[in-house]
Length: 303
Image (cartoon, rainbow, N blue to C red):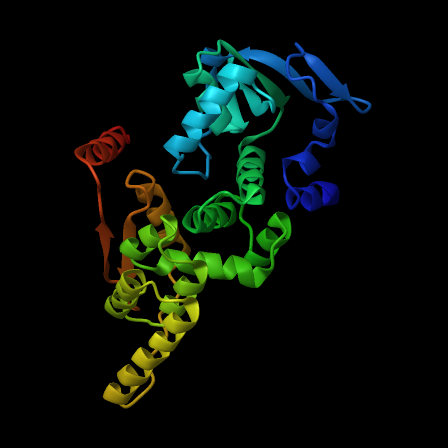
């Protein structure tokens, strides 16, 4: 168990040591063995593969996906995807972008590493593999961290150890989920950085946070300028009230699940406010009728 925990912080290659030595993507049913079968590469029919329900990535860059599709048409799949068996088919653990591009390129089969794992193991591998690739946006990383904590019953410290990051770094990512939806969109779209977000988080009032975010984007403020602006806003607020403003309270864990579950239907454009008495509001921004219809269909199908 200790070896597996250590490996989770180092990407999928550490979870499956044999992966680095298995380079023949076209091999059919080739099995890597260290005493017993741990992983294999097979050519799997594309129509037998389903998406990963634990996929932490919400947005796929269409231009990059098109470029990958054209590359696959010319050169084929260089790096196999990773799947697990599900009934008569397979479910993606990692490599959904490659799978989408291969399908768009018209491939009938795709090389894949086959892993045997349960839901928790799949969730851990999918999230850790994506985080270690460092190509998720900050909000996707934050949601991934929260999901690992919620669904795998991890503490911040344990999770930080699994993904190979400092606990303070994990905590800073999780704090992003407390920001209003509009600001989270700015982070996701890289209009503001993590440094900007930390300056915004020093303010407790959502309206003040949004005001500072708008100014950062409008004036292209540096992180240092944003920090100075936030400090000035805090001083004015404290001078007007005659006392320090009470820090925002931590949200109970179930509220993060609400943000995650509902947010996936609206591109995470959702924010939640809650008072100490348990009263509050949820704000959702949607970009199309299709998003609302998808969410409605999902809740109508709940038994």
